[in-house]
Amino acid sequence: MDNVTAPLRRDIAEQVTARILDGRLPAEGRVNEVRLAAELGVSRTPLREALVELTDRGLLVAEPRRGFRVPPLDVDEARRLYPLVGELEALALRWTAPQDLLGLADRLEEQIDEMRAALEQGKELAALDDRWHALLLSACANAHLMRLIAQTKPLLKRYDVLYFGGLDRARRSIDEHRRILAAIREGDLTEGARWLVQNWVNGAAYLGQNPR
Amino acid sequence: MDNVTAPLRRDIAEQVTARILDGRLPAEGRVNEVRLAAELGVSRTPLREALVELTDRGLLVAEPRRGFRVPPLDVDEARRLYPLVGELEALALRWTAPQDLLGLADRLEEQIDEMRAALEQGKELAALDDRWHALLLSACANAHLMRLIAQTKPLLKRYDVLYFGGLDRARRSIDEHRRILAAIREGDLTEGARWLVQNWVNGAAYLGQNPR
DNA sequence: GAGCGGCATCTTGCATACAGAACATATAAC
DNA sequence: GTTATATGTTCTGTATGCAAGATGCCGCTC
Image 1: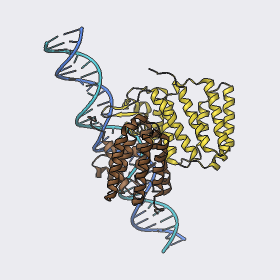
Image 2: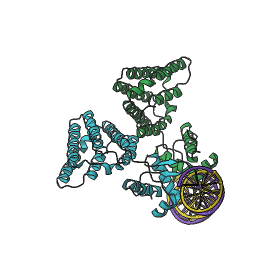
Image 3: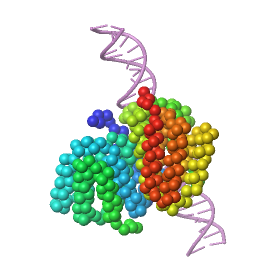
Image 4: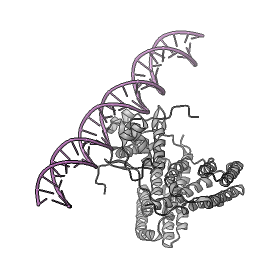
C-alpha cells in the first residue's frame, strides 16, 4: 500500500507521541530539541516539523521563544475529551451507510466474543476495544471527520493511567458494544449512536480523582 | 494579551491559507517551496513548518518526495463539510452553560439586526455571519472542540466561490439565527442546536453544481 | 509521428550553522 | 539574609548547505 518512503517526520511524530503517552516526556516538562533529536538519531529540522504537527493536535503547546511543552494533565480536560470522542464517533456512525454497517456486523460480533473471552481470562481489553471502534467506523466516508477522530483519540491515551475501570467497567463496555451492534442490525443508527456516546461518557465516569 | 512575538510560522500559515483560499495557490497545484519562501520573504524552514501545520488541518496534502499539493476542489467534500461544521458547532452550543448564552443574547440580537440592515443595503453578509457564529460559541469551555472547529472552518472557505445563495439564502440564514436566539432565551439548547445544524446544512444546499 | 531512454536541471528532505532571547549561576548591594 | 544585577551558558528560531530523488527536455528508435 505504502510503496513510497514515508517522510521522517511521520516516524518522529509517532515516537514523540509514544514518549508523551508513556511519560518519558513528562507532563509540564519542556521539550529539549537538541537532546531529543540526539536520542531519536535525527536532526532538529524534521523533529521540529513533527513537534509542530503534535502542537496542532493538542499533544503539545508552543510558547514563543520557549519551545514546546507537554501540557499538564487535567482531569477536567479528560472529562470533556471522552464525551467529545463519543460524539465524534456517534456522528461517524450516523454518517455511515447502514448497509455497510450490516456488512461489518458479523465481524463486530466476533470481536465482541473475543473481548468476552479475553475478559474471562483476565487479559487487557484496551487494544481490543480500540480495534472494535476502528472497525465500527471503518466504513464512514467522511474523511475530515475521520481525521478529527484520529487526531483527538491520542489525547485520551494520556489519561489511561488514571483509568480505574476494572472488571466492572469492562463488562459494562462489552454490554454497550452489544447494544450498538443490535441497533445496527435493526437499522436504528440513532439508537446505536446513543449507546456509542454512552460508551465513551461512561468511560469518563471511571476516571480517578484529581491526580495532583 | 500577546505581548511576546509570535513565531514566524504563525504569520506564514495565515498568509499561505489566504493564498489557498483566494486561489493564488490554485487547487491541484504543487507548492514550490523556494519560490513561495522568496515571495513571502522568509526561508524554507519556517515555511515548511507552516505547510506541515496546514497539512494536518487538511488544507494541503503531502506527497513523499513531491512536497505539498493543494487538494482538488470536490463538491462532495463540501457537502460533507458543511454538516460537519454544523454538528461541531451544535455540540459546542449544547456544551455551553445556558446562563452564559443568556448573557450573550442581547449582543447576538444586535448583530442579527445589523445583518438585516446589511441585507437591505445589499452588503456582503459573510463577515457578519462569521462574527455571529464566533460570538455564539465564545462561551464554550471545551477547548479541544473549539480547536477542531477553528481548524475545520477554513476548509469551507475554499468553496465560498461556489456559493450562490443570494438574497434567498441570506434571509433564510437570518431567520435561522433568530430561531437559535429564541431557543437560547427559552433555555432549550437542544432546539437551538437543531437550528444551528440546519443553518449549516442549508448552507450546503446552496452549493453550485460540479465545478469541473 | 509516437514511444522510449539518457542526461541536465530542479525540488524536496534533512543536516548544519548562526544570531538572539531565555535561563542559571554567582557576585554585589542593602 | 534577601534582593538585585551582571555575565556566561543554553536553547530556540531562522537561515543556509548538501545529497538524493523527481522532473523535463532532447535526441534516438521504430
